[in-house]
Length: 207
Image (cartoon, rainbow, N blue to C red):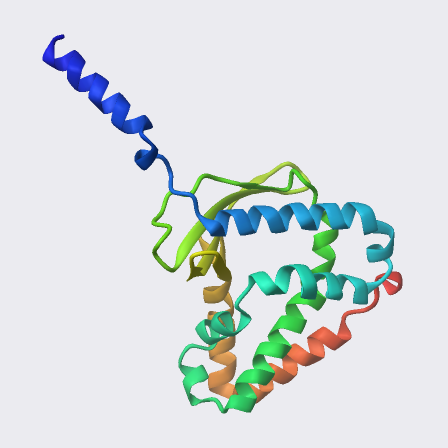
């Protein structure tokens, strides 16, 4: 067998060897399973969820929140202001920010379908944290958006700390937004704004 042919054959065998395949990553499984559960729940409970904001909030609490590390994400958002805040102020911010997100964006979950999110093969180091779960989200108009779920953890326990859509990080976005406000008016004013925004969102029937 010519040397070139032998080299090509060895390269092919190496490429398809088990150790050369993309590493399985628990984070991919977690995101895919959560998406499936979410799509199924919405399909079977759509009428209820469309008319009950509390039901949407409870769905997020039970299905989505456990997949996120809100505290780590909040710490990244507040950056240096986290270190100078009291424990009570940190806790209040985490709670207020979570409730704000649910109140503001919870209705978007009703658009979620089985084909909305597609998890792509993992291309990183499954033993390294943080790791990224690459996905493609299809919007209602058919537009496809590259979305990465940035996760931290180990073995089978991984949680989302940031989401990047087309390279735009939600952590960095809110950090930039809140940093100026905190510098001018203090963390307490930002927390109050979040709480007021969450409380002001009308029930679905009132929209």
